[in-house]
Length: 341
Ligand code: NAD
Ligand code: DAU
Image (cartoon, rainbow, N blue to C red; front, side, top):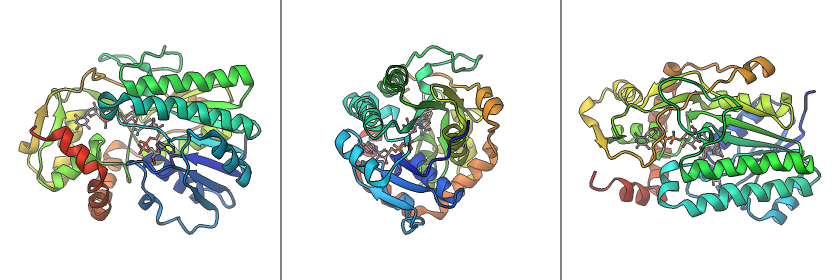
C-alpha cells in the first residue's frame, strides 16, 4: 500500500546526500513540506541549500539529533508524518582516528530519533543505511538483504548497531520502520574528504592524489540523485519492517576512477601518489539491488561515465563552494591526515 507523507523531517539535510534529497523532494512534489534538522557539524553546510532556502515549503531547524525532547517538539510543531534519517558521522577514515563521535551520533543519535518517532505518534521512519555493514567481498559475489552483517570499521560498526536498533523498534514497539543500504554515492555537494571530490580538489591545485594501497579496491558507484529517487520509492512504496539494498550496478577500481578524473581535467598521471593503505580497508563492495528493481520499479538512471563527467564539471563550476568548505575544519583535518605523504 502506498504512503503519501505531508510533512517529511530530513535529518542531516545540510550534508551531502541530505541536501540533495531535500532538493529532490521539493522538485518532485507540489505541496510537501520538508523540515531539515541538522546541527551543522563540519560536514553540514547551509551553503548546500541556498537555491531552495526561500521556498515556503522548506524549514530549517538547527538541532542535535541526540536531544530527543527537542526532536519530539519539532515533530509536533510541524506535524511531521515521516522521518528520513540521514544525520550521521559518515567518513571511515575519521572513524578510525576518533570512533567515539561515531557511537554518539550514529548509535545514540539513531536511538534518540527512534524514541522521538515513537513519542511523536509512531511516525514512519526511514533509516538511511550503508552497504558497508555487510563487510567486504572478494572478486566475486554480491551483498543481498540476507547477507549477515559483518562490519569492519568503527563507522560501519556504528551504522550496523543503528540498523539493529531500527529493526528492534519495528519488532518490539511496532514502529513503522524501513531500512535502506546503499553503495557509494557521488555528485554535487559531497564534502572533499571523500575520494571523488578529494581527488578533483587536489588535481585542480596540481597536488598529489593519495591512492590507498595499490588502488585495486572496488566500490559500486551511484549518482546521488538516483539514491534520492530510490529513497523516495522506499519511503512511499516500501513495506515497513523491510530492508532494501540500493546500488548503482557500476563497480570500479579506485585507480580507474582516479585516472578518469585526471583524464577529464587533462592532468598527468604523475599526480597519483600511492600511500599507506587504510587500516582494515574493505576490498570490494557490490550490491544486489533486485528487490528495489522488482518490488518498487526503481532503477538508476545515470551511468557512471555521465555522472562522473557531470560531477567533475559541477566542482569546476563551483570552486567557491570547494574553497569555502576546504578552508574550515576540513583544512586542519586534511593537513593532519596527509602532511608528509
Ligand atoms: P555527510 O557527512 O555529508 O552529512 C551528515 C550530516 O549530518 C551533516 O549535515 C551533519 O551536520 C549532520 N549531523 C551529524 N551529526 C548530527 C547530529 N548529532 N545532529 C544533527 N545533525 C547531525 O553524510 P552523507 O555522505 O550525506 O551521508 C548521509 C547518510 O547516508 C549517512 O547516514 C550515511 O551513513 C549514509 N550513506 C552514505 C553513503 C555515501 O556514499 N556518502 C552511502 C550510503 C549511505
Ligand atoms: O559504501 C557506502 C559508503 O561509501 C558510505 O557508507 C560512506 O559514508 C562513504 O564515505 C563511502 O565509504 P568509502 O570508505 O567507500 O568512501 P571513501 O570516499 O572514503 O573511499 C572510497 C575508496 O577510495 C575506498 O576504497 C578508499 C579509497 N580512498 C579514499 C580516500 C579518501 C583512497 O584511495 N584515497 C583517499 O584519499
